[in-house]
Picture 1 (cartoon, rainbow, N blue to C red):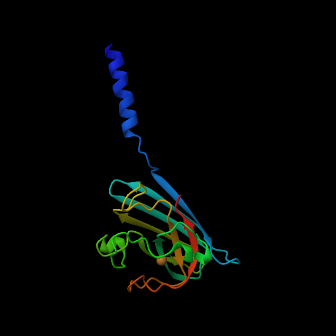
Picture 2 (picture 1 turned 90 degrees about the vertical axis):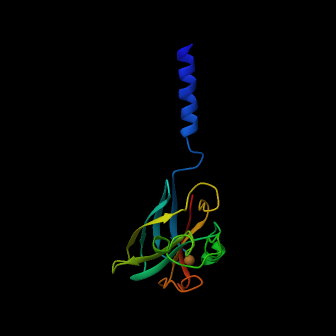
Length: 169
Ligand SMILES: [Cu+2]
């Protein structure tokens, strides 16, 4: 009898501790132009207080490229179908690690900076963002790599066209 109660508690504990959402997601980045050689991978890992993002993108032009999460999960029309920045609070544009969610959009990840070899890697923490469903949930949305540098001007950083795109899944 005691054994049965114990097993029931163990089973309940296992169910309770299993998250209903994925702890990790990935966006595979591809160039939006037909002849683009841009490729990349963005790994998003859910932490207690936010989302850790690690990205590697290849075959960029050297220099800085704006890097954001946009609101729609589509890369059609050379990335335009991804819509504007994911911005559930109608906040101003910024950089999450510096500005937080009151002065930045949840997916404002700043810039990727490619070296002379065209390779860029970045690790950024998006405090408050999550893979879980909810106000700051980013699952199914698009990661966009821009043509130009995000200069953090309003409303979206003046980063130009959308040269790379991938959907968070
Ligand atoms: Cu953008």
